Image 1 (cartoon, rainbow, N blue to C red):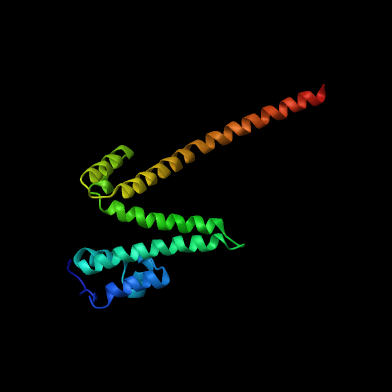
Image 2 (cartoon, rainbow, N blue to C red):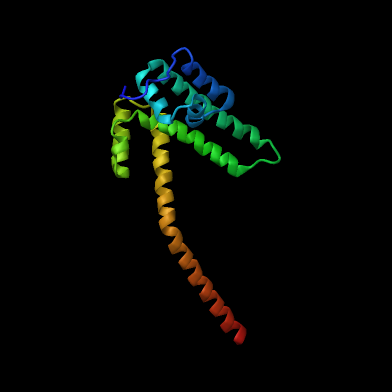
Length: 179
């Protein structure tokens, strides 16, 4: 543990409370850190140093993701269903699962390109560090990220093309109206 203020970690309280907050209130780690009056980095440090807290964090992440999925399912039968809110819940639950899987892969955080990331995932899968489902979740995330990047690059070009065709149509209509 780095030098500094002594830890406030209590093995008889923090693991169980972390799980309870996720299960009863769908808390994420940021909210849990707030209730514990520590920063998220402290939770991550406790996770590294205390095996019982590491296990509790894993269960809490699962409970939190399940809570988000439950909210989406309940919301689908509601006549006032907010699809945007459901989308955000799904993204957050998906991120929890993705981050948990990515944390298990050595070298992934250092990868600079999509090819390097995929290579890390393949290696982790071949060495049974992650399950095939976890690999798929991570690869799907890469696909979404690549699509978003492409969309952001192509959207301006597409807008220019649409504007150009709109001008051509307007000119053709004008010529047609004059004749």
